Image (cartoon, rainbow, N blue to C red; front, side, top):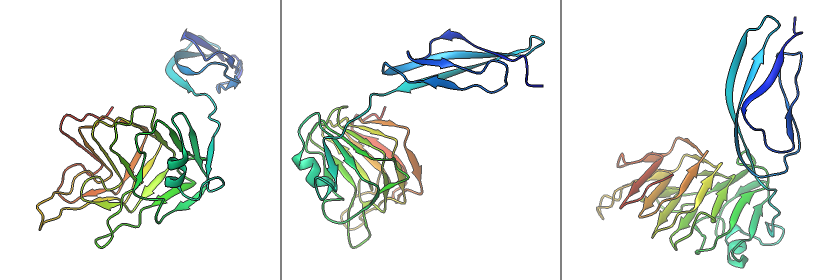
Length: 239
């Protein structure tokens, strides 16, 4: 029987505007519309009809709705063109699809404190760097002191090919936020003749401290065996 089950939040709090709604069943749902942003930690308890109880710690992160100020390709034809047109505080939204070629690779944030996000997440928006031995390209470059407010979110990045940071290079004190992205099949390649090692298959940090959060790394390669996914040097630390 599924009767007699009782759910309760026994510590912490749900975000304002949400409630736990599942009395009498072994399944619970959280309902409502959150009214305040932030991270909320809480513990739920399930008790059956004979008094057996189980508890679980959970957390929810509530973010404000981000209203884009520039859209690609509706307002600007490429991602770089949108960044060039943006000012600090802007939110740039990229429509579903695969983006490649000039303006959609080797993208420089140029010190701007902006949010660059896909419209519907990494599963729907891909940046194909089209890199290879005869064509060195990565997706993004952060080199001008970008801070946490410089955000890259919700992209799949593939086929980057460079000696330092196949997909993303962070240097010069940059500390951007990289979240909810997927990095696949990017390569940091060793340049034997010039003596340069291939480090950081997906991300390379040199004197930089990006916040790297909830990203996915699959099949990235560093030919010098230093950081197939992430390599950080010169006092860098990823958070």
